[in-house]
Length: 213
Image (cartoon, rainbow, N blue to C red; front, side, top):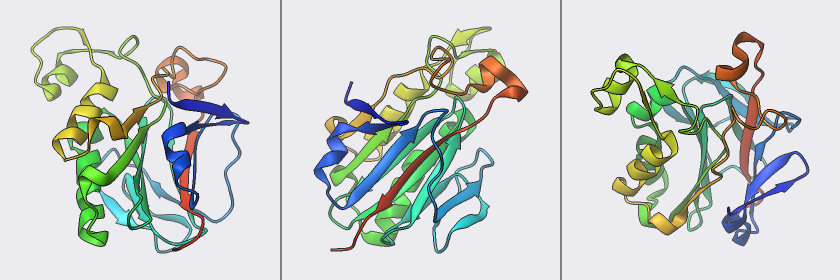
């Protein structure tokens, strides 16, 4: 696993090469930073540029290249995805639940980065944080059909679906880094809606550009 637990956050080791970057996938004990931009998440494919802090509207992916400004997404089984353009010092934070994954929120955010900064997908890095694993994501036919499966009951590997989508979008497989930690199984570290239902809290995954070039 290419992730290290530092304090109350997991960090993707391959992203440490960028000295201008800070990021973290928070555990259930992580306190949010100041100057944070978020969205009211609606399980969509909507992305937007973070032109301020606080809750900036409805959507599920934020882009930023503003030095010092954290952007973040909240999860409790859904997958948090952090995208990094090392050439243009642009970043994105993506909330990817199964509905957002079906809507291809990850690839569409890659497209938004290309439109804004001329980012080349093959040069991007993607870090996929802790989320519900295939071990615990059993679904009925109404959800399975959204993934092209004809089954009464089946298990879906959301992380693999996201990885495959990002590869189709142009990312190099070796630049996609996954935590491979199930939020349902790791009770002491993560919140889980499937496990705890309405009593579940949310984890925060964040990223920011520390300084411009």
